[in-house]
Amino acid sequence: LRHPSKLKKLRDDLYDDDDKLVYAPAIDTSNVTSAESMYEGCVALKQIPYYDLSKCTDVTYMFKDCKDLEMIDLSKWDIGNMKNMNYAFYYCSALRDLTIPYGVTTINSYAFRYCSALDIVILPSSVSSIGTYAFANCSSLSKVNIDNTIVSVPFLFASNAVTNISRAVST
Image (cartoon, rainbow, N blue to C red; front, side):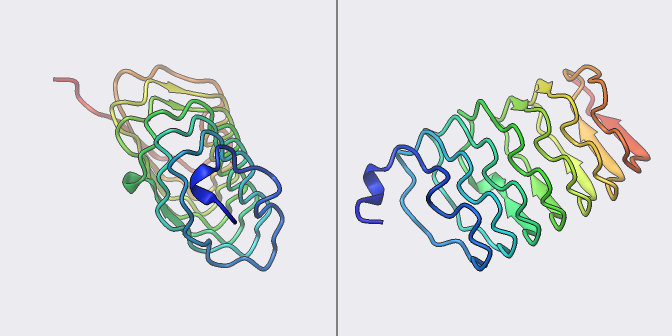
């Protein structure tokens, strides 16, 4: 990338369907407003560095079909401006650990569908809306901790093994 600090959109042509990419390179993303499909189809991708996505509003399909991605610590990412996470982690079947940072208000439809290794989800109190099928077909999901402000969403946990859904007590 010649002038990564001037990038505004990271789209299909950056790493899309690179089946040999295992470790994502660190690049300057401080001015990026869309990372749509950035790593979509990178089936061997295991590790993601910290990205400054403070100006980014769209990560639709960003990690879709990254089947070897095991962990991503979003708590270090500034993603409070995120508006669209549709299909962001769809079919990340090895994803086990996930931390959603405070500031995220919406988990969009299908965002984590088919993350079959995902075990525990803890959502911060800033999340007030969860889209349909957001965590559907997460067959290992056993515990979900959500805040009282979230109302029931149809098919949210469809085809899951969830046995423990706890709600935080509002103070």
